[in-house]
Amino acid sequence: MGEDIKLTKLASCAGCGAKVGAGVLAKLLSDLPTVHDDNLLVGFDKSDDAAVYKLDDERAIVQTLDFFPPIADDPYKFGQIAATNALSDIYAMGGEPKLALNIMCVPKSMPKEAVHEILRGGYEKCAEAGAIICGGHSIYDDEPKYGLSVTGFVHPARMWKNNGAVPGDVLFLTKPLGIGVLTAAQKGELLEPEAVQMMTRLMTTLNKSARDVLAGFHVHACTDVTGFSFLGHLYEMCSGSDVSAEVHVDGITFLPEALEFARIGVLPEGMYRNRTYAEHAVDCGQIELAKCDLLFDPQTSGGLLTAVPEEEADAVFDALNGVVPCAQRVGRIIRQADKAIYLR
Image 1: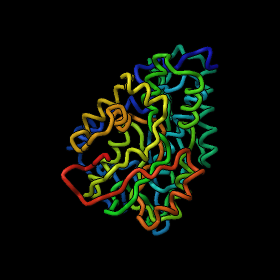
Image 2 (image 1 turned 120 degrees about the horizontal axis):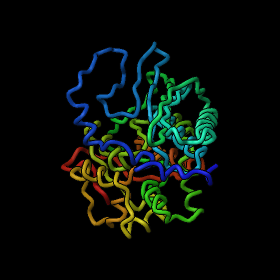
Image 3 (image 1 turned 135 degrees about the horizontal axis):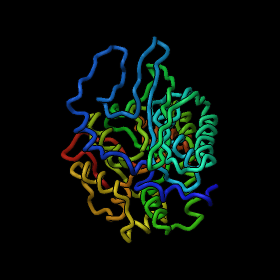
Image 4 (image 1 turned 180 degrees about the vertical axis):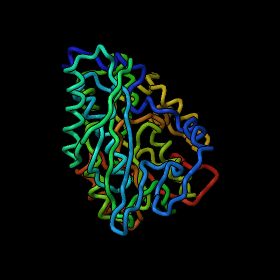
């Protein structure tokens, strides 16, 4: 099927790189009215990954929605990636996904077999997560798009937010960085098949294992690293928590191919949007430009970025290591300073 149709050729941008920039989005939402409800624990005004609504003392609903244009040429793999990415927001809140609805846009010319394969990829990935796709909505559009609205559950007292980090916390990341750059290289037909396979494997790996491990510890803040980049999401975490962060760049794993492409200037448009949004809050120090670019790189279906107490850090690393794609101890939270983030 992937040989019959090149999905990425049907879209002007791919995956989470298609997201509206964080700065633009903030302005669009700035004057919208918010409704007060004591049971709404997290709403859109918190810049968090999903909404959370308390049902009772034991249960809260976690709801999210995510969809995007193709980031893979194979329809089945595109469906898997889009579903994995949508499910991630539930895991980032500490929740467990249970129900999902398809959201799909397809060109009238797209073969029915390709549409079926996209849906099959989404259904199978949801089944792996223990969630049920129970319907959805589709429309015709010139560019294909696919994703999910997902509902999950979490205990109100064990919900994770992106704004609870405190000085002394240690930062962990569970997937390597560089997917956005590799996506740009793929669109230019510059990637070797092995790199495409590796990229696809990362983007179809659920954050379920990371969530399950972290649920055994005290998580002060958590978010998934997606379209707004590592630095964009960390900036939101620091801003919401009234803290700053030191990032140990040597502790971050960059995909080797991505670093090579970044050094020769193969960069996605979303990287520039993310830099415009957050660079004023970042002290890049003496860090190589290509590595800084990858820290602003929009990720699709990226890993969890979490802040945990220092006294639990070694145990967290040991528990994550070998379970998630790439367990990384990437920095620490410090008292609020002139900049939100300092690269070291």
